[in-house]
Amino acid sequence: MLHAVSDMTVFASQSAASSSSISSASVRQLQSLQIIDQTAEFLSGLVEELGSVTEKLAKQA
Image 1 (cartoon, rainbow, N blue to C red):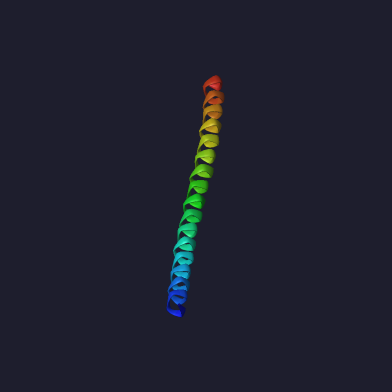
Image 2: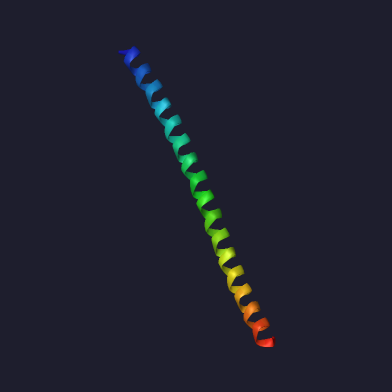
């Protein structure tokens, strides 16, 4: 009986360790997606800015 309990404890601790590594991987994935999203937003704004500058230059020419 005691042996079975220790086996269950080992299994539970291994499960907890693997689920925590999975969640930290998910967090890293979410962070990189967030960075990609922010970069895309920045580039989109930059393109808009360039577009308006180009329009102003075209009107002046």
